[in-house]
Image (cartoon, rainbow, N blue to C red; front, side, top):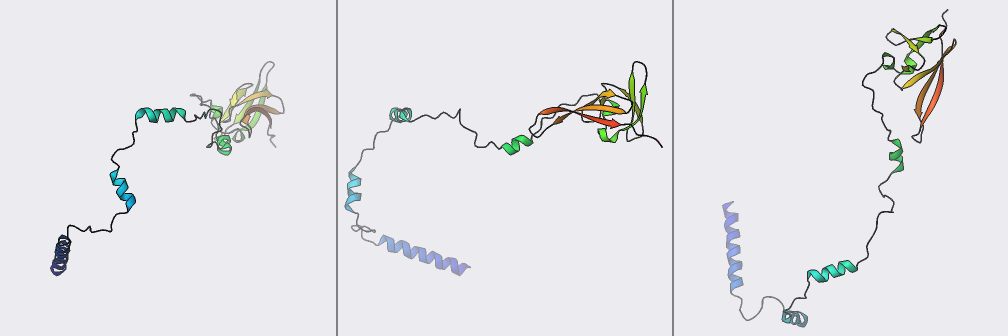
Amino acid sequence: MKKNSLIILIIILLLMIACEKQPQNQPATAPASPQSQAMKNITSKPEVSFQTISAKLASMPRYNFYGMKDPFYTPIIQTQVKQVKPKKQRVAPTEKYEIEKYNLIGILVNKKVKSAIFEDPEGKGWVVKEGAPIGQEDAKIKKITSDGVYIEEIVVDERGKEKKSERFIPIKKSR
């Protein structure tokens, strides 16, 4: 290792001595071309000031991007985003599960009031009247008949518009 560094040091010294021995009168490189000699005679720099730059900027055309389409707009991604309504803080016991998980097991008919009895997946029964909420889908009981219950729910179509949808849940007959 020491021998290699000693050899490198000697080579560097020899190169330095060889460079010093070149005559001072002759240039180390090739003679300069007449164009480069003419360029050496130019000593003044072109004047560039703030006023000339601002005048050039003022004369440039201006662009208005207000009416142009957004190049990053993607209709596919924009239609998949759904607006989520904030949930109520207090949830009724009939809104814990989806509508399909509730079973209609009975209907009570008085002279003035009609009520329906729903059973949740835990086996608990709930008595509900017309206008009461049911299911996680934010549905309401629209009408109670002797055959079953009509439920009105809000459904979002493929365009993102909300529509009211009505469905009928028949009463389960016992054997």
